[in-house]
Image (cartoon, rainbow, N blue to C red):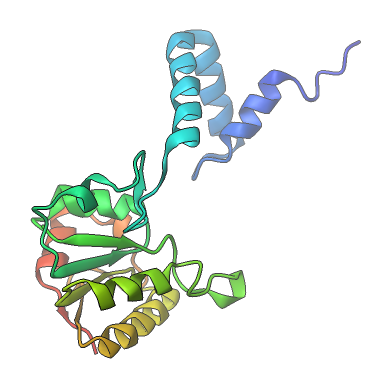
Length: 201
């Protein structure tokens, strides 16, 4: 009898478990759904995923995801240059764009400081951010960072950096619970927290 322990079906299920929140049972349901009921869209998913992984990169200025040298926001000359909002990941740029009236620019850390996990200033692009503070006319650095232990450490380091360049620092205010992650907030809470941001000391 042929050994089917590493069949394509098993590989498909295992591959789907790489998605956040997807365990083996959920991955099995996804795999069987695609194979039984939706092969055309499964093929489209595979094709788009392959193209995305090949062509999406980091914006040269803000580190957001884009297919081009600069993302749409950085390439938009009408955005406010004096406000720079720092977020942990690209999904938060999308959330803020959809739920607030912010018209400034962004910088995406792609994480937060965590020396034990090997995430230091270089991995977060902090030298690149400091170069922007030095070269651009930034008046306010907005810290849209979760209030976790690592988030607080990251915010402290960023505030010290901003102080070296005489840049005012604010942080999202009410509505963000201790240990909270921005991507899990509802739109009204996020908008209120952004509009009610306070001076960070």
